Structures are given as C-alpha cells and as structure tokens.
Amino acid sequence: MPIAERDGYLWVVDGRPGESTHSVIAFDKVDADDDATTWPSIGALLADVATAIDTGEAFDGSTPTIENGELTWR
Image: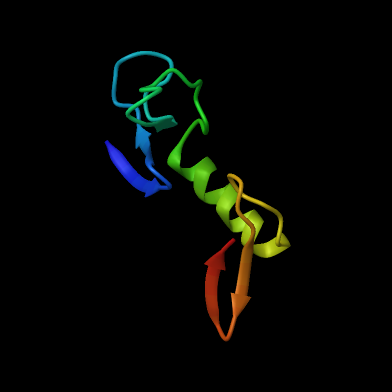
C-alpha cells in the first residue's frame, strides 16, 4: 500500500505474506521492488524522520530545515 511519494518513487508498505510483511520499501516504475527493505515498519520510518528533524541530519537524501516555523526538505 503506498504511503508516500517523493521524486518519482513511492514508499509502500509490503502487505505480502512473509518476513517482510509490514516493512516499508522504495518502489518505482523502473526498479519495481528490487530494493531490499528500507525500514522494517512504519514506526521505524517515522522514528528516522523524527531523528532527522531533531538533529538536522539528512534523511533519505534530504536535509530538514525549519524557517519561519515551516519545515522544508532540501
């Protein structure tokens, strides 16, 4: 199930039976689901986003900044 889109690819929750059920993977029209699991769960994805915002470190290739109370990713 798609949960987010960015720069031409989707993050999807894997609903197929097996070890990767509920993991989050990157999916695009070229690579399909060839990549390994990106995060083991939505919770792990959100924890990484929160850490990036708290620390200012890059997340998935973009750095969070807060200007005038607005969060942007560069």
